[in-house]
Length: 352
Image (cartoon, rainbow, N blue to C red):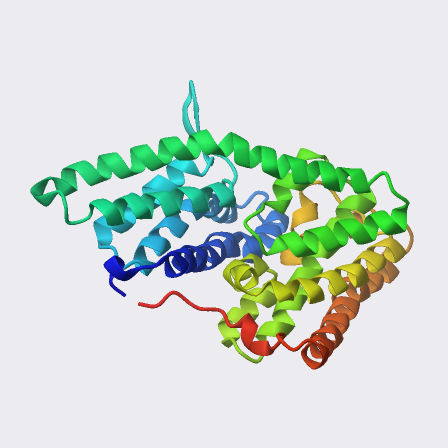
């Protein structure tokens, strides 16, 4: 596709596709290995190093998204590096202190989208117009302008995230069952968006049953997209969804908001499960679902009684009920909702 013929819709789609793939590349290593390495890394220098590496990979999520977006627009290698650098600078992951530069967290995905879109627009506008000065001006102009604007918009984006957090926090004042359902549905609906659920949970210190319900909301989102994806996507995409990395489906969800219906129904089911089993967790575990077994492990550590029985209950709660429910809900939606089908779950892998 020639960049001179990129319209608004294809421009936005290119950015979203880059976000979907970039999130998987950045977060999958820790999702697969993180919790496992925590158990075995003590006293083992090699495993400790591997654990540190998979954590660091997450911090490069913005850079990866920027490079993939540039690839979508068919930019040259230098352009990809420029867009990736711009995304990194404006993501919020880079922190400056007296000790130097630090990387903290994964950045804000909403802000990454803003910065990447701006950087790509500036690059496309200036590409081919600067002659021999292009390799001198673009590496300076694009990252500095988009990076500075990203740092200026970051506080406002974070306020938006905190506002959602206050709404979720208001749910905690309701009776436990209603609270569990509302938090679970909210996290299910927001899981496959650029909004960071870990940021919301930590901002309001979501603990106990509220954290467990949020955790089950992630599960609801993962199983919803898994059963929608099974017939239309490759085994690789489906395995990623099975692992729990549903954020890769951001472009799919934003193009087909009808998916909010099964997300809501599955959220209600999982919210009831969280209440019945009294699933609890921490602010950090709230945004992980069953990925890396973070949710089940944290829930198990907070359950009293026989451990074997608790494990069986958690297997039923995290896997048997959500998977069975999502399977039934998906087929009912296909039967009764005209615009709902397997095809809306088609994931577009960035092309060469």
